[in-house]
Length: 57
Image (tube, helix red, strand yellow):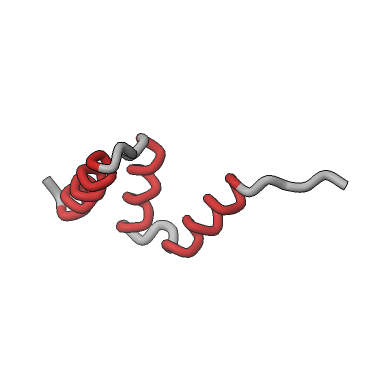
């Protein structure tokens, strides 16, 4: 098991204890960040944009 797999598994275990296990998409996003394919800030910005409601005028 790679170092990144161990990190993701540890995060998933912690989140699962709180009743919020990681989805497949979450694990893929984490892997991209850990491998340097996307910055953590870019990942956060993308999630904020995805889940922010846009107001209609």
